[in-house]
Image (tube, rainbow, N blue to C red; front, side):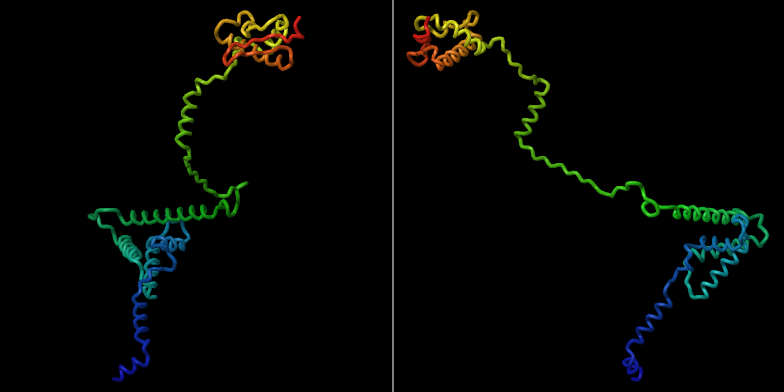
Length: 269
């Protein structure tokens, strides 16, 4: 009964015990900021202040094992790769200390130590190269290009709005493009109005009576065809102009009947 009353008096104690137990069982893999066991070995080998190819693997193994033991004493749970590397270094240390077994196959302890030194040397080279690369000046931060343009994206969208009639017209223009030629007006079969006026002024006064309009056409323009039509139209237009000026008279008895001309009585000679 007293246990129940104590629990009711401090209801958060059970939660505190659970939190403490979970904290004790938590897995912590951070080993002083090292990225892995090989990174730790590289740091330990630098302490010897010798060439990586001449490091003491026995001393390196002892340093690594002491580091792992100290980390475990501090209740830091190590990751599996750190423990595997510790076991491998302990095995390599025993191979280096004991005399070699002539019946054993595989690489010797010296070969394994040389391979480890090569891995450390390659890791050191990669870290130095990455440090030099990341230490260079960056475009847009330490130095800037002249006239550096702003980043922009161009998006093009095609939308067709032509009608069927416009498509047919465009097709017709393409089809007739090669056959098109500029229009040249042919004037050899055209009787000029000025010529008709000059001719009609010269001969209208010699006509004593009414005369058919076709009789005033010039020679060579009286045969049926385009030349006769042009000469007849120009002569008729010239007669209208002279009638307007009061130099001749025009009459036509009925619709589509022949047109007759004569000079005004006071203009006859």
